Length: 275
Image (cartoon, rainbow, N blue to C red; front, side, top):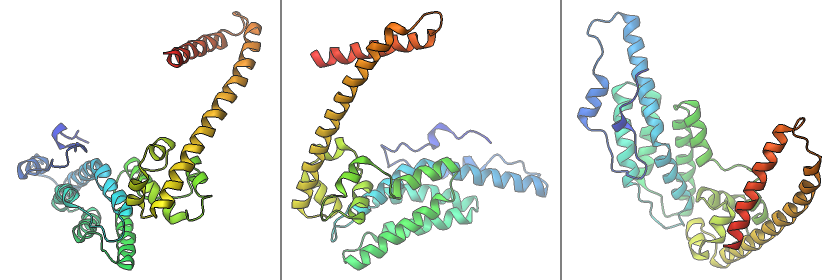
């Protein structure tokens, strides 16, 4: 398969990038004029595969919008202007290459994004469920690696994330709120402990007092984790010191090499602690 031109790749940090008509024409050009049926089919399949590969460059754009939509509080509008611009670019490719499944999935997402997130609670839930289904239908059109990455962005399951397991014990924090936290990127200790409680309330829809409890519980959880790590390291270092004298250069060259590397890392860590 021909390599994609560098300028066809989407820079997620600049959502204004679009494909011009000239770009599209260049992509679709280059087929020999005289092709038999089999060769023509192969060329069309190659173009469709290229369109799907290119479509995979939009995973972060579309996934990020879905995350934001799930994080909006009831009554807040969703701004989808930027993602629509991205969708229009790749949708034009899907249509020109006659990739019906890809075009249909993109059209469904574009319609939902254009409609915006409804204010009514029941309508909002229906909209988000439909948006999620449409996004997963789009994911099925992508190459396996791209599909799995998009699914990881928009699907929350029981991921056994230590922090979310901890927060699930708080009264008032159920699967739906955990899903919203995950979709908003609030599933790591650093992200939640450094967040303003009101920001968490805004993106998840939980009451402000509950958001304060979430931040406090996360900070306590972080402190307990730090203590566990340091105490465990202390025990392991003592064991490490007892093993070192038993290592013989002739019998354990790889272990000795690993031991040296470990000591160097510990020296770096000590320097950071004392600086």
